[in-house]
Length: 108
Image 1 (cartoon, rainbow, N blue to C red):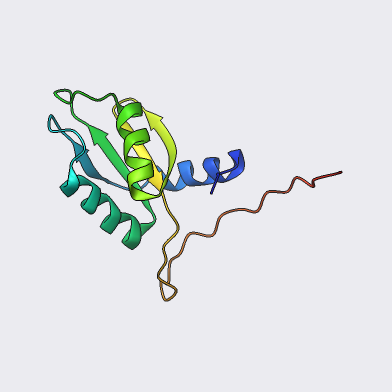
Image 2: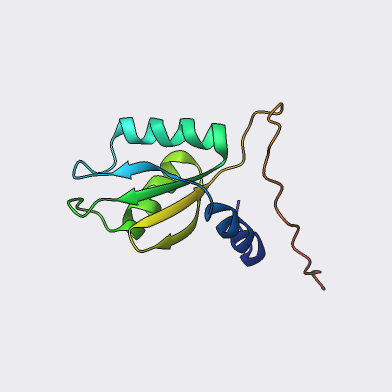
């Protein structure tokens, strides 16, 4: 699933109001962090993470390493923070994020 620039912009806007719930420390990305990220993504779809100064990873490296492990997309990396998005598989979820449709028509 590749996000379009419009969808990325929409998710960046939504991410402004959410709290940072994932913290990458000096231990880097371990099984616990991946599980925590997966649980949070399933519950919220959009999560914000932060990389501490004592971490061996840059925020970009942390986000790009975590994305494939959680089957999510990196929405944004800014400063020490990053935002990940994955659509929830829970069909009963009430506040599901509905992405804007890409308006470009493919002419062939």
